[in-house]
Length: 61
Image 1 (spheres, rainbow, N blue to C red):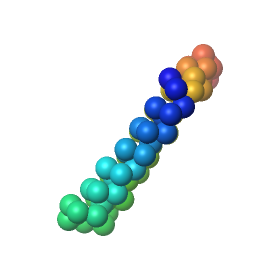
Image 2: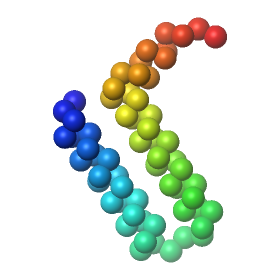
Image 3: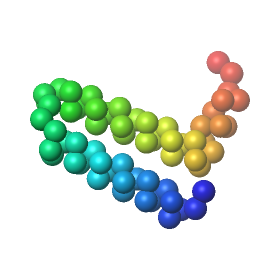
């Protein structure tokens, strides 16, 4: 996946999250949970794109 595509996806997710936080009235705790979930999903997606998540599946505990 090209680096430009990754940057565009991060920017789009950031703008959408900013729009939701700015213009949709919600309780502060719900906004915090929404922000945390979006950031966690974005980090997991980035780990998967860069192949780090695939290498962690081979580790046995």
